[in-house]
Length: 420
Ligand SMILES: Cc1cc2nc3c(=O)[nH]c(=O)nc-3n(C[C@H](O)[C@H](O)[C@H](O)COP(=O)(O)OP(=O)(O)OC[C@H]3O[C@@H](n4cnc5c(N)ncnc54)[C@H](O)[C@@H]3O)c2cc1C
Image (cartoon, rainbow, N blue to C red; front, side, top):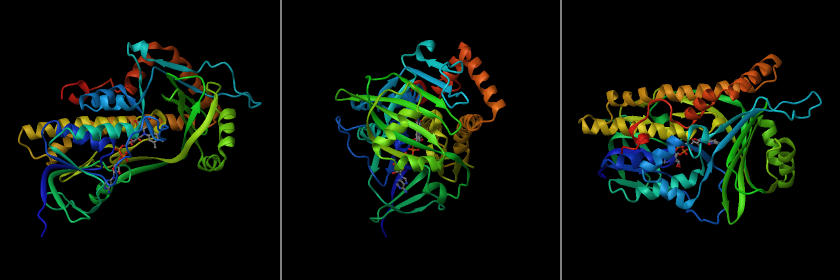
């Protein structure tokens, strides 16, 4: 019989959240084995931007800096954004868009004395930087690409068996294996789920007008239309366009030729859209809100998309995932220092207590936006525009929303505060 290799912690999934988790624990000398079925392809500076990008908050930036991944990300590429505009698109009965916008809110980093609100970064860049950082951390072993044949999560210690016959055990197994988590399923952790009626079409386009420092989002009854700036490459500028719509409309848009699609974007999107030069790539994503009923069972715990997925309309999914990392790493490090077993229910419930309410509040906030804007009910439309107009003119309210989105309001974990 093949003997198992024993670690303190096993992490299944080396995506942004799993790789950050392994970094955080490894930096404290905890012995970690990380498994992923694939590895991202290497970065090439002249490569056009990937389709999958994330707006990383100030809090995520601090976490990635404290983990030592940020310089590697900067050495690849990222795009800061200093301002963010949000409004609801209003039309005359003739269908023409209203030119004057009394319902627009502008968030400006300068108003809270910050250089930027956040950074748009390709997911692969963040993941590669974390994996690069893991190479420096002796107590972490990365097994990827590796196929997990079986997991035994019912014994005294969780065990992972690879297709090549190798076996690994640990005192705790962390499921960071994404929205369709196999760990979650095998641990019999149930989910509360809500499928949204909208889908999200993401397109990477080359634009005219140089590097932008603003993101904007216009709400419509079929979902938001958004613009995210991307870094310049070889003197050319790019943007990520996000177009929420009903599934049948997204299907139609996906079938258009590149030229027809750019034409549809130019005629539908707000006038702020820079002139589009070329479509590079497009893809569509179904949207679902999922929340694990429990974040842990005996010696198994979930983090990131494995524990929760939210409507991406405010770009907060992986930012919540990095907060999970910060709090779980703190709880586990304290437990190791106190001589407690990391898989103990008492230990893991401290993590769930630190995270569940915050994740729930963010999910509910996104749902409130989704429900408030996804209809054409006239009184509701008037009410939300009055509310947007008033909120947009109240500097303290705007500053509070900015701080919340940047992850700098409320309690902070050590990793986000800079002591690690
Ligand atoms: C359209 C869209 C836009 C978004 N925009 C933003 C944004 O602007 N800001 C933001 O914060 N978030 C955003 N998000 C959310 C963000 O993309 C996710 O929250 C994030 O990718 C989750 O990271 P993760 O590491 O938890 O999971 P994943 O990225 O799914 O990583 C899971 C990892 O586990 C591995 N894995 C899975 N199963 C196994 C297995 N059985 N064995 C071994 N390995 C396995 C996978 O290969 C992968 O590497 C967006 C999401 C969408 C859909």
